[in-house]
Image: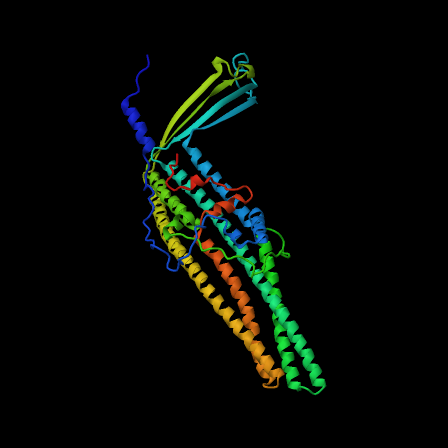
Length: 488
């Protein structure tokens, strides 16, 4: 008849299973503003869409797809996640019995010199075989292994959020570099067009000088104007080459030319995504990463405090030992052992307390970093929103300036041709117009890049869309990123 298990033993087992030293994690209170300072009135619910497709440029879409598939930083980040997953698996394995096996076979001969010979009782040489199954288990009475596992899991999730942050930066970097490139292309086209116009003016004035219709000063002024425009072209071409090389690296390939799609005038401007500050806590990978780092540091406190208490471990072996291999698994050859061990500290002279202090200080540092990351995220969004608004205003003003200068240059040329003014007036008008046109192309490109920066600052579900385009897809299932999910 089986004896019933005592209730005290059941209660002790339940108590041991649930005993975990150290503080349980609770998300810190965040003083989030009710709204962003510079959010415009007209916004769209586009934070969870593939925002780069709103530019309506298939070439840009292809470049981003290629970058997500081939970028080496993304591959490095994915490998880091696999490494963190291995650490988590290794740490968590301590919760379960470790079962192994061992087998030995040996043949020995001892000296017979000076010894009483009993060849029938003690054969010499001797043969011995042994095969055993081994098992060991550390009873996690104080939750040390569970806290270490909790920390390792949080580090895994933090590493995966870091990988998602790489994806966020990659997409925005490809977009902003491509938009900057299209702005430089427009500046180069303006410079080449202006240079051709200036070259034609130099040619005309040289002919007029030969026939005495103008002065040498006018020819020199036209020539200086031509050279001023010529100086800009190599600078812009250098910037174009450097930007192409930057995009090539983002695409995971050697430096080379980059295909072009729509011009800076034909691109569509994406809508400003809607959102509230508190949503950043769930959308921005850097904030999720900082929180998981805080969770990991918090769990380390409990793991350190558990070192004050004894460690209880059980070991055992079961197998057979025999001089004959054929009898190794027979009844008489059976052998077993079982051992319980308790090890605990008495005097450590700061060995354990020092680790507790380190863990608590690490948790405080992680907490301050988490709060700083949140404040920095709010500032990023506000900066992106105000830049988007003010660049649009600047673009409108720059367009009006260029239109006025074009009219000024046209009228100055008409007055000079009619003999009502000197060429200096024409030169001044055109020298003012040329840099204004270059600035207009730069500001137009900045308006588009500010839209990309806004989506980067806001985070959003679009990262999951981009993540699916990377090689191998997501490393950690989305539902595993919930901070409050139970460990086991």
